[in-house]
Image 1 (cartoon, each protein chain N blue to C red):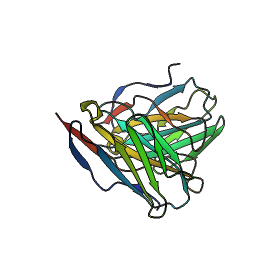
Image 2 (image 1 turned 60 degrees about the vertical axis):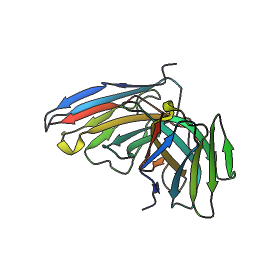
Image 3 (image 1 turned 135 degrees about the vertical axis):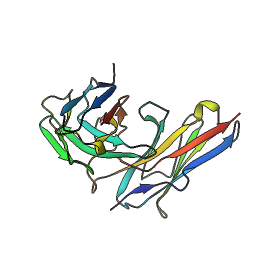
Length: 112
Length: 113
């Protein structure tokens, strides 16, 4: 199993550009989530999904969209990139609530 | 709102000593807690977890203690090694706070040879 795979690993965007961060898991997990991690800080929840076709907002959802058309994939879309979205983004998946979340290696995004 | 936090941002220990990393949580409905280790440039890695019906759980060289009375969680690492140097996060899960983990701010553990 590859676990949780995120692409790309690094990305530089200009302000106003849009892009999609990809996340795929091969563990047949129902729960998937996106976090952002700013320097020297913990992880903050952006959006999450408890199953295909179901998504919900986390702590910091503004400026991001998600969809969950399959169990395996959970892409995160930046609609119009802003410098405040410069961060490291982590995707995670788990069997369900109260279970270990497996994390991808992260996408380091810089918005200039 | 409800949050998970840590007492110490940085902990420096001598190789071979035991390390204790602390975490305070405020959501009394939290029933699942987990510790992650994050090395530079990598995603968080699972260390150990504990449910609220337990007060102690042991793994290989690690022990997690849960004190629900004072809403306190700790991670003990025995015989700390240079490879233990990383940032450690505690996280909680409660059914009244969404379905995902809520993370604390992290503690950096530095192991001196």
